[in-house]
Image 1 (cartoon, chains in turn purple, yellow):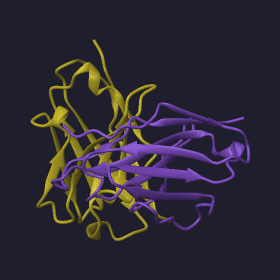
Image 2: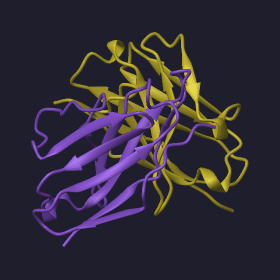
Image 3: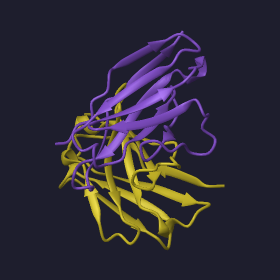
Image 4: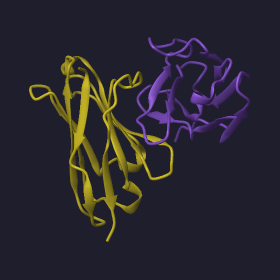
Length: 108
Length: 116
């Protein structure tokens, strides 16, 4: 079965840049999506189709993808950005979808 | 207001069945793929299944194939997940979400607990 691999945790100080990676064999041909989930809340889409930002998401959130790795970048991370972040994509068939294991971002 | 509201969760014994429902409002339900995503206690998100606008295509994560069935009723603006032969590892908060990748709308979730 297809897997997306993320680091379990990333830690930065406020104002620093946080980078969360997601690796998967199909990423060169399939888009990555990124979801933020704060404790006790439903997930929120922060990046779609590798690098597009939904309306209402702060500009400090950006995404990129190169080869088998997609990256979520939070430029000037804020305390309120502390959350679990999940990448999401599909396998080479385009029919089976998977979330990465999630990355806990700590900003302190 | 665009909204998804799940219902139907509860406590069930191993081997039992449950049917989850998701009521949609505030958007044209029939024009969207719909998905189920679950989250076991303290664990990450897991995609479970999705269904095309007209119900003609359905896809499932391997661990639920043959046990779960996703369906929809566009006349009732509703999404369903029939879960049979439930296992302890199916214990989770189940979310319905609009679309099959750009999940811009989520419900609040309904909790399924499989335990004897």
